[in-house]
Structure formats: C-alpha cells, structure tokens
Image (cartoon, rainbow, N blue to C red):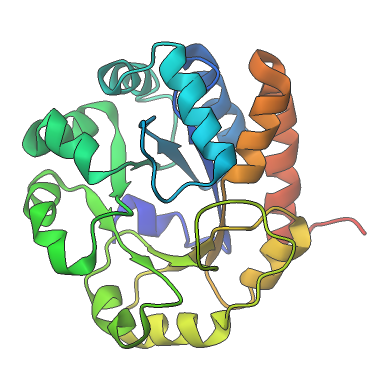
Length: 261
C-alpha cells in the first residue's frame, strides 16, 4: 500500500487543496504545515497554469495571482523540497498534461521524488491516454491518481482497477467550485469503484460545508475540498494561514464525528 493509501487507514480522510504560490511561495509553505497541524491527511497542491480547464473561477483567479507573483514550476518544486522531512502527510500535485510535457515527463517525476511528492492528479489525461504518464510514474514510485466523473458510467470499473493512491470521484459535472447541493448518485458511483478496487476513494468538487463533507463520507473514504480553502486565501492574503487552519480543523472534525452542533 502506498503512502497516499495509508493516509486513509485511520478513518475518513480530509484532503485539502491549495494553489502553489498563492499568494506567494512562503505562504504556501506555511499553509501546508498549518493544514497538517489541523488534521489534513493529504494536501493537494495545484501547479499554477494559464489554462486550468477543470477549474472554476475561484481557482482560476488563484492561478493568476500565483503566476503574477512569479511562481513557476521550478520555484514550486524548490519550495516543496524545503518541507521535505518536516511534513509527514502525503503531498500530491494537481496539474495538467501540458505542464508535465513541457517540463519533461521523466524530469518532472524525478523532481517529484526529490521534493517528497507522493502522487499526481492530471484531470486532462483520460484513462485511454494514461500510458503517456504511467510508465514514468511507476518507475519513480509516484501514484497516478485517476478521476472518475458522473459521465464515466461503464468505464468506472476499468478506471478504478488502474488506480493508485486513491480514486478521485468527481461529485458534479462541470468545473471545480462551491455548490449548494450535490445531486449526483454518489452511492452508486462509489459502490462501483469499491467493487473494482481496494484502493480508497475520495469525493471532491463542490464540497465546502461540514455537512457536505459528512454526507459524501457516508459513501467514500474521504472528502476533498479546494475552492472553499482557496476562497479563504483570496480573502485574507498573506494573513490567511490561521483562518485556513481553523477551517481545516472544522472540516476534519466533521468527518471524524467531532463536529459540535
């Protein structure tokens, strides 16, 4: 079992997302440490990109802030490397095929190992094209984490069988963003995943409130939250760290059965 899969062994996992370099790289380091301190089981770090096709407005704006502040893929690698040996939870990159290809796929995965990154999520790399990345990931021991969407239907089982780390179950059609209500049949989706693999599954896209995290964790092994955290960062800038920490604690407590009514 990989380090990422191990993160699910002690109950429901909370996975928090931030955009690397937003509002700056020094704050990114502080946020990762704060999120771990407050119960995050995995931190997902978005590599800022000019055309993040899976992202809604909140994360698009975060990418723009990070790029404007001078964040590059190399600078983000260097920043994450500074945390190696300090952070004990798995760190995962969320990025796009273009970023990896332009950097050089082999070089990218080697740098992931060097910096302590345990897995990659690549939304625009479908199952049918995973061999573009999988051999390089396998060689370096990097988990290639697949996404399963409501439209995956009869492909769910074969996608799940290829999974490493965890299966990212997309709760809603469309891009990332806070949603008032999630109407997808998550019970059926997660059941099909669990019939195909023992790899844990976590649900993301649209989760922002403790009760939403509780609801998805009735079916899945964990909840993924991105836009709600990035919105806090946008609101508070460099002063965001304690606010993000408090939010992460509240969400983790909710899926651990500790939420105060």
